[in-house]
Image (cartoon, rainbow, N blue to C red; front, top):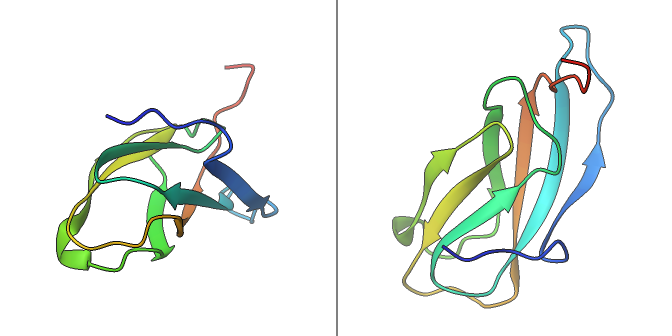
Length: 100
């Protein structure tokens, strides 16, 4: 797996908590190589949040999410892609309290 530096993946923003206690966050990961890559949210959710890939893969036949965790996800990319292209993701879930 490729270990990612903080500068390659960051949260773009965090939206306010909704009436169900869920938080929605959007982030960007810069695609620089083939293979498996880990993305970390920078926070931890109670359970793996709902994950949506908004944009960033040129060849969906060779892109797949292979693991989703409370603190991030792992994807694999192969085939044709543009190095330096951003992968934009969005997650929705309940954040884990620091006191629990």
